[in-house]
Image (tube, rainbow, N blue to C red):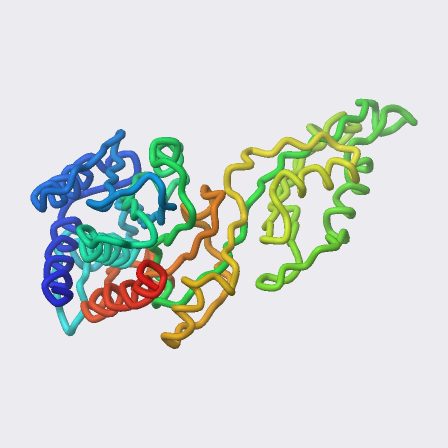
Length: 354
């Protein structure tokens, strides 16, 4: 059965690659995934370009495991020498836009869902969610269907990790800060220079150290990346704005970090969003331990994914290599897909049946 699933997954991925599915334009790949599941007599649910389904013997009294990956892609960059939609296999590599990020993960998780679909007496229900707009952290992807999925216990998020275990992912806060002074003539003792006032807060962002340190990532990092002030050389600026990039670790929530910052600076601080949360799963979790027993290593992921939208324990793991994501002539090894399905099942067996 596993060999059949591996073959079907490869063919499904070829079909997905052949369909343009930029973020916000994933309707055709959503159609394909929907048809693929329905042809196997699986009831599907759809909202916009998101498709989800549950195992056959769903039991509301049991907790639910989420299997999630995305079917949108970035646009091909100018370095492509191949047709990004030609799903060709050469030297064991399947080429094509989205093959590695995250097509290999997506079809491997679909295969894993099919493997368990009609099995009885599982300890957990399984919800498969294939979602949109991941590449742009859009509002009409996983985030918009989470309320429809029901109560979830923990999740596997399919992203290319070489099947190693990303047990934590940094969150992201982008802060727009405004310091207000008073305009005046630079030649006279007039005004209240907003640049000078901003220096104190900028230095705080540079030097402040948060007390809690993540076991996986170490210290939380804040970096001032943009600054704007002034209109002409002889006018004391009344306003200075600057932007801060904050990479939040699993030691804090975004809300906690924002509160600490606002307590310590005088400038007005406006976050562009607090949606992209730090996420993690305990290293002692049975799913992680099952992966470690299979020889997989644990690490903290520097890249952001739909994992940031989940408020439950989640593990990011999947076939492929993050270093190939968004590269020209993107590819995934055929053997990586087969290995991904095999390892997903071996990791889940002791959790679902143990």
